[in-house]
Length: 71
Image (cartoon, rainbow, N blue to C red):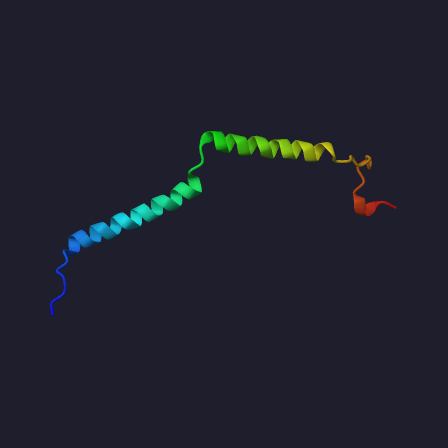
């Protein structure tokens, strides 16, 4: 009728190790990009931004008059 005998100290240590491993896995997913991957993403974003700005039309000068106050 008796259950298995468990050393509580070892159980707590094992539980803490599994929790640390779970947290480490989450961190690897969130922060695990290499420097090359980060710089590639940054370069692609800058290129997309420049391409978008090239197609932007410039508005004519308003001589310092805000848009709402033109007559």
